[in-house]
Image: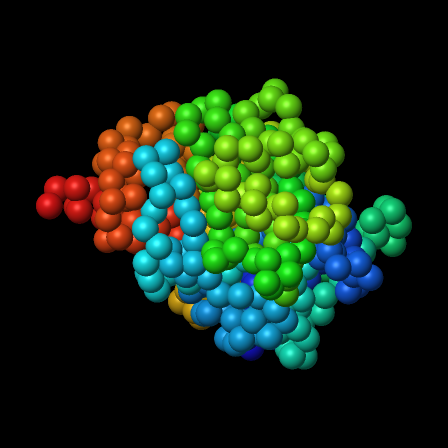
Length: 428
């Protein structure tokens, strides 16, 4: 192992990237702006400044769990040991589509729901076992070092702007999330021609609130996941998931501009009629663990780094920095983890460990096609993706009547199989 790797951002994608780089670089430094929370004094899971989604439950798709397996061996056992529960995406889930309820039969598609703080704790503990990894909190990147052809490190300051430092690196990974300033940083690289980064934005048209609850085991429902999909563009939707211990997370969605609940009574009233009364029945037995958290409209954004004609070597961007999706679909952590696995494959093919960043970004963009389509219904340029959509719609209608079809659809949603395989099944 030689050289140094730098990871910008200590969220899920950044921690995974650091764990992967630890086996390939002599030193790895993670630069995170905000401190990680201590174990909370209250029963509600802790949240972290700078990560608004940390106040909400997190769902790791089965495709993401498989990618985690490749990067952090033993993470499942560690997560379960801290209170998380494995969930069969079909047998343990009550899922209502507009056409009806999906059959609850064993699928072998295993997912995990938990707080973000719990998952970050598991990943940070995995990093603590790596003597060559250093996590620096309270550090923000303000510029990239190097030339137009190769990035050679970063310039950092404290969050308050003090203590400017230059840190050299053979590889810089931007995993700083939805708020990434990479387009701005690229403009600071000497001898690099100024060229704007193309991006595509598709608004979800929905807004949502979330809240943590506690349910005693004897009051818990016979499912770990309740999901009510919207029946039309102006319909409400909801999700309730069992997280660690007796904590349950609830998310309520409504169209942009529609009123969202701000107090206990309104929260319950919003659930009237959702899921055939199952959601309200569960919440009436539950104890709120914290305030109702309001979020704005969740947009989807693709930054087309793959199209940059002069992308410098020694730099890659992954996770929300490159592809940020509406959190309702639960695909963000999976997209980040798959990006880390892809980067590992690139590094293992490079004898010098100096990744050709532009080539990586092209392959990563191909990985983004399916999750982007699932979250937006659009192609990479924001145009409606008509290809295979009729088949997908037919599967959604047929899924309540067939476990085989339901499992195939869930496998696509969990990024375990390509969406094109549904077309093959439609043709049979």
